Image (tube, rainbow, N blue to C red; front, side):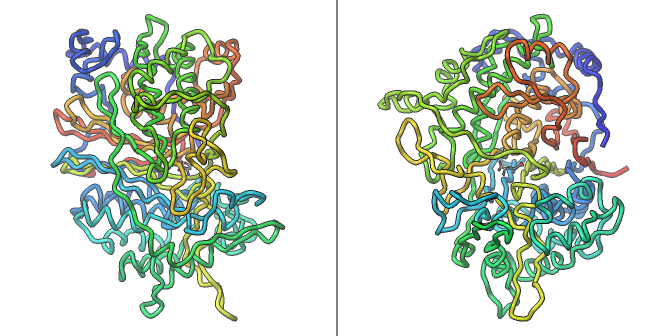
Length: 632
Ligand code: GLU
């Protein structure tokens, strides 16, 4: 797919021109201090509550920004029929299961961040998969290709999560919001380029039934050809008629046998793998699954408020650390050698990532199970101490070790000694999906949803009775458990099991980071997020800097090339589009730089708090689609 990226100079020119508009004069340092910023950097005028220089078409009745056009349409229709942002988000999530089944669906889970216009409150519904009760820290040891085996399947959360969202915040029923997805699965859709390109991956062909559906006779559906999923339509109808319990509780007398399909499906082990291992999930694991309401991580950056996904995501804390470490530097100021994409800017961004990912590898995990030092990790003194290692024009060497944030939230804890530690396991793929919605009342949703790898474990929920054909439920099972540490580790400070080691009922550490940027007085401006494994964190970080420091419009902020490092090492990934000088300077400083691969897929909606006008931005890296209402 071609990507429309403006030349760097044009982006900067547009940004600078917008920056000279009336009312955009940099504000005084006194104002900075009243915003609680310990920095000499002057704020752009929009940090006072004025919006950045949004461009694009404005709407008033709602906007959806989704990584697939059919699912965007599903959300727009729900908004048009009186649904609110939560109703539309639920409809989009189910529709994506049909049209982007490689990325997400009811076999997986995610995080739905909801901002309510009436109360100003932001919550997150955590429908992340949980480890079965019989899961053990060493369950992956000696299992070849564990992410392709049933042992990788976590108890799915999306159905309970969407049920909770609608009950608490929606206007419409689950049955109503399922209608667009049922229609898409029944009537079919035209295969999109991305659907087609993913369909014959080795994961899509991991089981005979998935191969027969996605890649029949070894050939992917041609772009534009009709794709239907009748079994999934039937599964959705069962849920629409009987409610979420029909997914989680085996009730054959009611026709609810989806749970049997999940339990049998996750017993899968690859016939071709001698030490294959199925999962241990039981009916009780499914019955006990609960979605959880979370309070987002709160932060500020140059006067803006940010609300980001909290544990079991590592995203909120890691992005906050990176932003706060760089807040002392004038990233937007070209005259000081910074500015978008300059060697100096990318250099300090990269080292902020390396420092934050060092802490992430030790201190972040499911805080229902481990004592994540969430206050210490973002304490101003701790962040200042860590961030002092960032020196423009130099590369942090040797690779940074994790710090010890505990004394910064509990003075009784003495800082420990530094020891090497395990690196995170997750990685990006053709998977996961992010979308954002705003409705006519000003409610916002930022929702990242996943089955982990592209096509999950490549196995449909389903079962085979004696002499019966395969009863297929039409949705793929996740491989989310491989977001845990694959081998047991030890926290080098506490001596306890690693914070992201497997435990029964625990959720694997995620990188998914649905995010909201608000004005200093708490009015929502932007809802956004991204897929991409641990690169999600960096996509969110890049886009936040593009908006706040580089003053880009939302679409420019999404289109602009991104930089990512997901470990403490000096291996930097740069998308195409950075100046050659930036690549050369980084290499000269000793970084290993790889270029060319896409990073993330950001979908965003924007509200101008002064006028109430709404905007959308979608990512050309995938099939990003914005629909604004009313339609022309
Ligand atoms: N499972 C990953 C996570 O929760 C997301 C996978 C992806 O985005 O590719 O962090």
